[in-house]
Image (cartoon, rainbow, N blue to C red; front, top):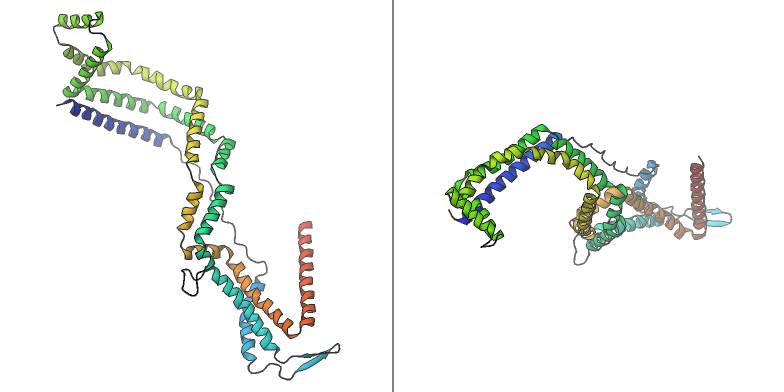
Length: 379
């Protein structure tokens, strides 16, 4: 068997024992681990709905009422009816059609404006494309920029880590955790058995043992001069023993597992001192972990991460996302357009009187709203 084959055998067996060592550590970790406390899931903010649901239901009926009035106007529309008030004659003829058309126009324009935010989802030759689908990439860029600059970025993450002292806390917990593991007698026995088994299996293979012996002899030859006293002494010792240096080294290697077993008590001393050493060099460990963590954070491109994820939203998903958060408000805008359009119809019919009435209604509403707000703040 050539030198390369021996090297491959050593590497392969080292990998196998490395896997067994990792399995041993993982078993101990599972044994001493406790389930982390489950953090309560963040409550979803409640969807804000109007306190006056009846008003939304009333507004919902307005477009249908206007449509009914518009149809009625074809059959009857205050034909020839008028009235006099404060010396002014009000002609009601055609009033139903005026207010119904104005109200429907107000509703339809608001409905069309909101619909054009999302539809068409794909670009059409004449109809074009909805505002949000057409500007999806720009919206993704702007949102990603806002998030990465103002909400979360490497500097904010670093500051939060520093303020929370998270690394120091987890380093202390890790030291306690390591102590619990290495104080386990079963772990120590298994670790010692694994070390002895590894050395024993390596030395037991004649080819591997021969390869190790050759490397040792080569290193000894390289370490001392050709004509030095040490080299002469080694050759003399080999001559007196009547054996080649290769055989002497291999014989010594055969006894190595026994020597390791006798010296494993020093491993206990090392394991006993390990937690204290970790505490002693705690500041150095924290600094190393902090520097490593900061390097990883600096490589985190929050802007690209957010933007890429937003770009993956298709048009319908983006529309649903916005509507889920604000659908009631969008509907309110649509139906309010019908009411405002109806007021516009009255202004077309009788400008001065309608403006006076509308001003009174708006003023009364604003005053009442301000009074209620003050009462809530004072209570």
